[in-house]
Amino acid sequence: MGQPLGQHFLGDSQVIKAFAELVDFKGQRVLEVGAGTGTLTVALCRQKPKWLVALEKDEALLPKLNERLKDAKAKNVQVVQADVSDYPFGDFDWVVGNIPFYLSSEILFKTLDADSNASGLFFLQKEFADRLVAKPGTPQWGRLSVNAQNHADIAVAMDVSRYSFTPPPEVDVSIVILRRKTPNAIDERLVELLFSHKNQNVKKAFEHSWAALGLSKKEAKEKGAGLPFAKRRVRELTLEEWVTLSAANRQTKTMKYSKACKFHD
Image (tube, rainbow, N blue to C red; front, side, top):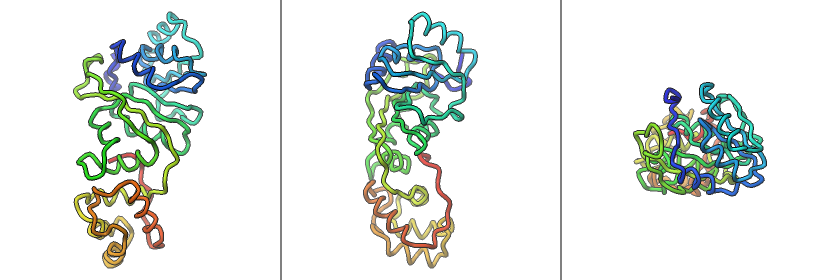
């Protein structure tokens, strides 16, 4: 049940308790994405949030969810049937949940977007989590790492056995905390384009992106040579260096590309 929507239901009581206690939700406005049958919802309610919205798309799960909340005498909770893609995040302090892995990028992007004020606490595929917390120069470091770390302080709180879920996913799982922060002015489209040539130095990667950058080959070659860190490999640049590179890039008026969608590799 629920598998067509990519759901793996959490049944391990110790993991449920640990997740709900990772953040002090008392007095906080919380949105749970993918509430399912309510096992995590009940645990979150026990943390006494100001209010909790339990969002669930699958109509077939709502009777069990409502029954569980009634039996637990859960307070300050509202069950909403809606698609997460259509539901606004702007009124919440935290967005949390055991989310479908195929929606991980979308939900993280929406949580940390400028239209939201929320931080995030999620079960994520471990491989995806490792990319979120990756360090410069490692194989996992990419534009997802750069853009996500620019918007939040991110930590893997704990790893979770796949057998804590029913049915077990085919991947390992981590719990990740993303605490929102004020982002620096990083050119996300530039990050995307240069990471397409991540093993090259900045100068070469810039030259090879000439068409997407809206420049002629000659313009791209000349500009790339004058950029900061021109001889450094793209995959080695730190978050602070991307800020510097973005600032230097913005000084040129010839850039014509469109803005990138955040957090996707």
